[in-house]
Image (cartoon, rainbow, N blue to C red; front, side, top):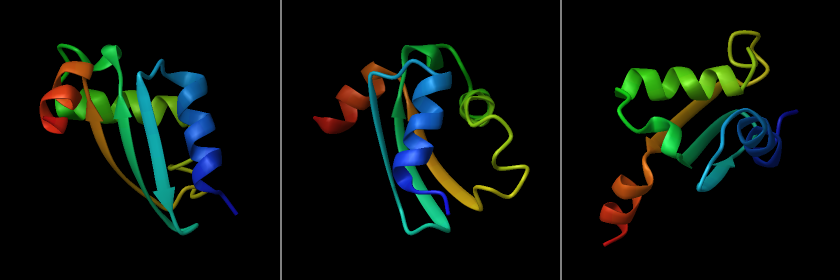
Length: 81
């Protein structure tokens, strides 16, 4: 079974992150990913970058469901007030 720590490690290996948090119950996961790599990217491009970092684990069914907030450092700072 995949754990939040596994998903965090997969993302961190494939994408440079300023902040990364993953929570979940083994079937459904939520991630907050803050990366400079997202600058100038659309929401879809950001999700595609995260999927690439996961290396096909969503398509294979290893990771069943992942919702994500993919933000630039500036967007993250603005949301945190």
